[in-house]
Image (cartoon, rainbow, N blue to C red; front, side, top):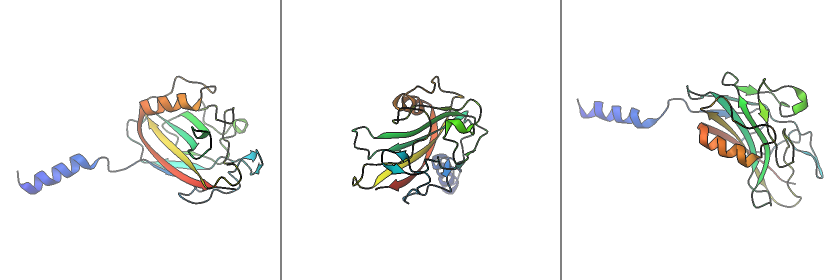
Length: 181
């Protein structure tokens, strides 16, 4: 075996997968301001509270389900703020339409669970940082999971869902939008 062949073999071995998990959105763009459509309607904010359209590609071959979270690490709570927690998304689904985060819309695929957020109820709750608190970062993360479902329901707190996500993640991808008022 030549050194060149050995070198190429080692490069392929340690290069990882050829396709990485990617998260896309026509509504949320990395480092860009989140539009009023996605902003919460309450607590002094007057947005439309529409969850963003999301799509993804490049899932690992052994993906059995997906999950999505939206989290603000800058919230003045000491533990951030969970804006959206969604899991048990079937492996054949690769997109959620705008507004799917409204549990009353019926837009989620059958079996998908939207769990309790820090707003105290399931479903999407958009950005609404305190006035004058500066720029907040809203991280939308997609997880590819090695299990078809998590053993939780819509009353599960985000921290408990996060525990299971970390135990079952095959990979993740994120988009971080910003917002301030």
